[in-house]
Every structure is written in C-alpha cells, then in structure tokens.
Image (cartoon, rainbow, N blue to C red; front, side, top):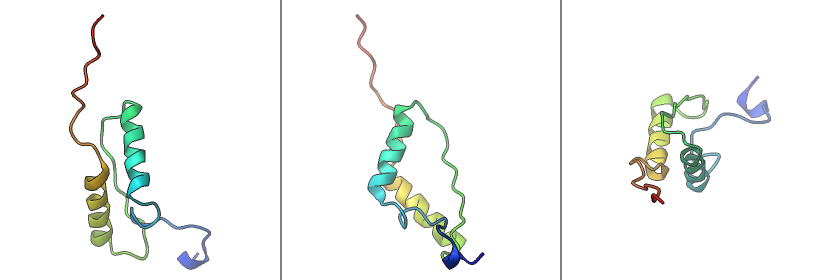
Length: 76
C-alpha cells in the first residue's frame, strides 16, 4: 500500500512528535529503571536512510540524559 494511502506511517524522530515528547519518553525509561540501548530503525519512506538516522541521532542527543544519576538515597 502506498504511504499516502495509509492511516499512519513511520516517520523520522522529530517529524511526528517533537523534542518535548521524546525527552519525556526517555525520562520515563530512566524512571522505570531502564539503562540500556535505544535501537533506531529507519522506516520513513520519505527520508533517505542516512539523513533519517542522522536526524534521529541529533534529536536523541538533545533530549536524552547520558550520565548516570549521582543520587544516593540517604541512609537512615
């Protein structure tokens, strides 16, 4: 089925949801205790693969927390 005939399509990060959405998404992963990789799958038919992945990486670099938290619970 042609992309324009579908009810939705995969798009490059930032072209469906903005930075604020992805920042909240990544923060939710951290709050849930997830500290592992994020895999990028490029399935946007309107953007060349290298450009799509580059834009996705650029967005994630802006929104993701990279360093581990230095918070230590206080001992009682």
